[in-house]
Image 1 (spheres, rainbow, N blue to C red):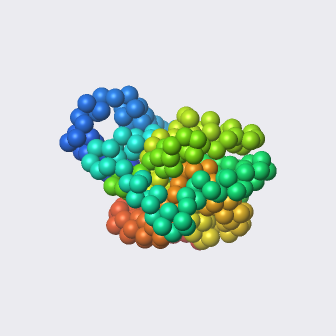
Image 2: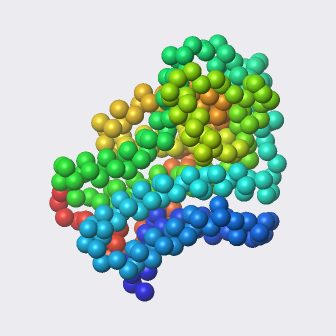
Image 3: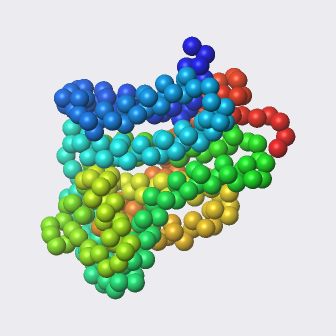
Length: 307
């Protein structure tokens, strides 16, 4: 029992609560999906991993379990993201006409169409696709670099890393819930051909299009988690690792514009991402304080010794 209680870190509490929420939603509206492979695979992976966590006596793994938790949670996000394309059809209708209408009202045209038409040269296009692709790499790099940087500087404050991981991963799950409440496919699915596509003019464009074919789905447009997560990541890095923060700034700016350029988002999605980021972060900070309940410092990696 003590092992099970110790396993319930704030990160795993949020993951379990999200699973409970989505399972309840599916049970109410489409129970047959509970037996679908897309639903079962990530949850079986989680159960197998947690069983391993409970039973392993490997000193090497126990030393790195916080990093293993973080990387596994991040890698599983792709499953839960694509799942929202199914979940957001269960209750509400798509709001793409409203979002496209707001863009039209603000600009007198559709920026997600005009942007790539006006700036269509191959160099600029590759720069935009590169900026968009950085979204997939920046969080993962941070999850690996930060503990390595702490170890290199002999900074023995694992609680800081655990807090960083919780706030980052829980932000994803918060946005996934918002995608269910505000279902939107995005310009690349809403616009009629050929306006819903942008030609691949270089290797970065082909790479992004390949990633989209594998893991993209008609979901997640509003608010833009690309923008929201990126600015939450920047906020967290500013406190933890300013060097990485400044390295990420230019990539984040490129990402901001690229989401509209490659037709992943409407401009209103980007604005909503910017506005929602501090709200999502504040909410998850509040949750973290409530969930960080273990009195034993070893459970969450807290360390009261001087570093």
